[in-house]
Amino acid sequence: MSNAIHPVDERLPNGKLATLGLQHVLVMYAGAIAVPLIVGRALKLSPEQVALLISADLFCCGLVTLIQSLGMTQWFGIRLPVMMGVTFAAVGPMVAMAESMPGAEGARAIFGAIIAAGFIGIFIAPLASRMLRFFPPVVTGTIIAVIGISLMRVGIGWAMGGPAFLAKIPDPATPGKLIANAGYAALDNMAIAFFVLAAILAIAKFARGFLANISVLLGIVLGGIVAALAGKMHFDKVAHAHWFDVVLPFAFGMPTFDPVLILTMTLVMIVTFIESTGMFLALADLTGRKLSTQSLTAGLRTDGLGTIIGGIFNTFPYTSFSQNVGLVGVTGVRSRFVCVAGGLILIVLGLIPKMAALIESLPQFVLGGAGLVMFGMVAATGIRILSGVNFKDNKNNLYIVAVSISLGMVPLVAPAWTQHMPHGLHPLLESGILLTTISAVVLNMFFNGAQGSVAEAREAALQAEGGH
Image (cartoon, rainbow, N blue to C red; front, side, top):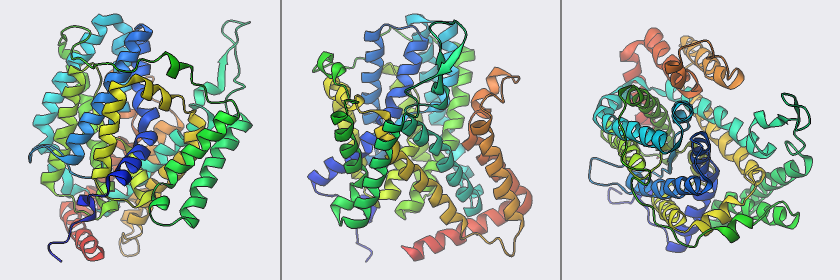
């Protein structure tokens, strides 16, 4: 039994790897290209330059995913089924930088701050990983539940056709007036989203083996076919996209290094580390592989390395994509080589813009049905972990969960709650996952103490080893 291969290290046949890897890519694609679109427009770059950002982002997503999932020496790579993408925690600060300094000059300043923050991240990763003992099940279950709840906003937004702010659009006839967006939450679009949801559930119930494992992919493909037949999927961008494009470093010139911008991006790096720790804990639970301090350090260090790579290749800070954590829970496929295959596909998409444009043509509402399943699965994982927490004999754990989830909801329910606070604090206060993490760790220390944390974490680890 000691020589048995762990499911995380299992190498599946190439055909299955490619199909399962494509499923991961489809799940993360919309989120992966969103950040370069947002920042590129904030920088007032030309359409060609924005397309360059997207190609560079896909290329680096794939490259950093390979490092994280496959591993590169003992220093880099958590060696779990992780898909890497640009962190949304960096969007606010980068847009602020772009608006104050648009064009290529602003791009060079952003990339310089990213590169410097990546180097700092590599050095502080070992310090961050030593906090693992403060994450017993009452903390990790709460964090993972809030990750899932936070992601539900994304999935629902996909099903509606975009984020909630798109429900109202400017009235072209009356400047300053907002009118209802007829395309938002259109019933025919939502019908396709629920068709995808129903297809995934039907495949999961009635299919067996490999077909059940790719239920999300099959649901998305079926939804895409329905959308195309309904005339809602357009291929204009595919026709105009290039067949091949090389991603070159420093396309906007040599980066510049501003101390204030570097400090801001380092703050984002710390936020990313805390969120990544939650993702890694969720994956460790889903895959049954114990998360050691050394492997967590290697995973966080890769976040730093990926951020450096991003800055060099004209893109942004990288972190593990929480969307794909939910996919691991849905499929039950724990092999990290599936994500290696996904990383290779992303590299190809970064080098072949026509293929990337084909996937981009998939309407968001098609992904919405899949998002409802996957993101709910993340929340369900957190609830499952909390079900093993002792609430009967230690009622203080109820306070930890109750207050931490409540604080995590603040940025979701009141996204403008930071408007009167210093701008430098916004990256910290706009992340519900971060607020939940800080609250859960501090309250657990207050009620249970460090020794209670260690004992509970050790007991949970022994239970996990016995269960697998």
